Amino acid sequence: MINYQNLTVFNGSPKGGTTINSFDPYTSIDKYITPPNAGKPISRLLPGASFYSKLLWVVIKSGLRAKYGTYSGTDWVNNSAEVFRYLESSGIQYQLEGLNNISATDDPVVFIGNHMSTLETMVLPCLIQPRKETTFVVKQELLEYPFFKHVLGAREPLEVGREKPREDLRIVLRQGKQKLTDGRSVIIFPQRTRSSHFKPKEFNSLGVKLAERSGVPFIPVALVTDAWGNGKLLKDVGKIQPQKTVHFAFGEPRAVSGNTTESHREVLEFIRNKLNEWGREDCLPSD
Image (tube, helix red, strand yellow):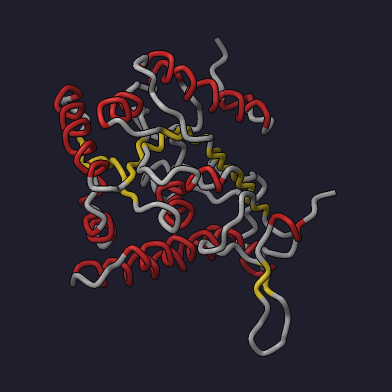
């Protein structure tokens, strides 16, 4: 039996009413599991419609604030936490682990993870930003989305395209090193694109190369986020599937000891082992 008292954050109602069980991004915990009563019956009935209607408002209000230059790191965390909780209220269950590893070193780090869906882009800020000032490596196309482009722009991301891999490499190594030197951690998804399958052959070593070039540790990140599916017409608007559990796991900070090949292998093994541990062998290559 899971001991939720040790895993979740309990926020008492200020009026002495019903206790609310919810994730608090500003509380130091290592693990979190969604409490059994987190989902709302009405939201569970139509999870997609319920979630996307709320998400639209979050994107609009945060985008407008960012457009006019009043969007802070705290705003980013709070909006991300809203998305986290809206997904929970739609019936999605989270299992988070290794959160204390994020702040296990005072140094900025390179977070290197697999990339499944839009969910991690929306949720990672409330997991990482309260513990480490951070930004993303993002594709230029995300900076063209209405409203959302202003939010990302406010976080000064590293912009890459898809057409010129060598130029992307130079951008990430040069600008990423500067971000890290300035004390800001960098989140990078080395896969070519979002995919419900983890494909090591398409998972490049840019993350560990950035860590090695910058002289900072890296943290491997394994995730399963296909509860927010990729859409057919609009990739960011896919099916919300509460029957699938969302997993995030953060490994311990690791130094690149002059061998980026070995460090890259460590990242791949961390992700592969976690997918097996979570019973998601279906996300692994069959060969």
